[in-house]
Image 1 (cartoon, helix red, strand yellow):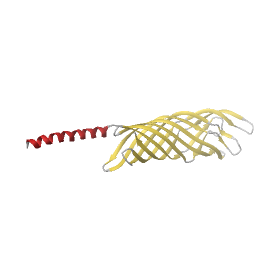
Image 2: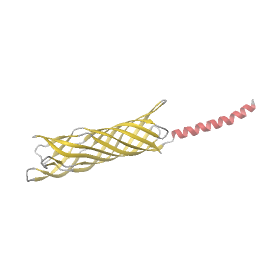
Image 3: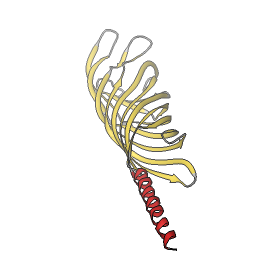
Image 4: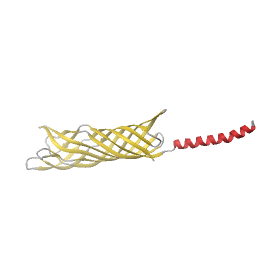
Length: 228
């Protein structure tokens, strides 16, 4: 009996040590990279041109696309990320008091954000649901809204503004390091204002303050993530 106990004790010590090692490895965080891209569905926009007697006018941003990359650290149930994101969409119509005007313009946003997310895992299934939010700065650009007669209705504008987002993300583990997933993000860029020159007649132009209201966009994306 004594001999059996002496044999069992080292085995238990080795087993406990291996469990401790495994637990430490499981709780240890890891850096990861993520590349993503998808479709962008925009809400309606509006612009106020001081020199335009129509005042504030509405426009639609056609469905566009998004792309970007991020670097994050996984603490176990919480993630902290730094993200670069590009969003773009075309603007084809400006709604004036005198009727809709066909224009050739586009919206573009290049942003840097910090995200925080909480993970929710499922037993016996290699799926992870992540919920979070992010905030940062975005360089927002609207190109000139020019009609078919080369009449500049709204001059081009670019400004760096506040941007924030809500995130829902679902990922499937392909192996211990790589995962593939889908995400939905709702992103809001704050008001953009500047000054420019607009056409007010066949041969006349005027300097004018120009202000775009905040824009909300729904992003439906696919991503690939890899733990370093």
